[in-house]
Image: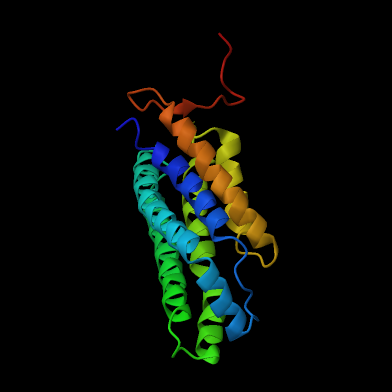
Length: 216
């Protein structure tokens, strides 16, 4: 499918829109009263945000599946790494779906008078600190794609984009730097999505010149 790679770009757009709608949620140290007030006041936009994030998770899986297929066909480069790509995409999608579920629970509890402040506070803290599956999923997807393609003589990705995947895939696991690398990983997905869409219809990969290649 020629439009299959665009699922990555669509996932990024849905994610950005979803988090923009969600806004500045209460921090991990917010009181139960503050958590209740926020989700009672932002119920409608939170529902809309969660819907978009669930859709983003779906398109992430489609993109990861397509990218894994592309990586699998890399001559002497793909090997088993295409499985890492799909595994990373699945973990990333699970992170989105689980995070959306936790936020949905907060919306429901905020509207229940019987829900105690400590319960809301505890659930909110868990929700705010739930980022490890996102980091792990993005890192695996990037490393799988980058390691399979950056040394290949014939690759579906430009050399600089393959190297960027490896670098970002490492940085995303480093504390404090990881947030920036994760955001840059989203940009990588968007750029890769567009470039894969522009590939020839027969899927001809990019051949890289080597120093020993004779000039014609």
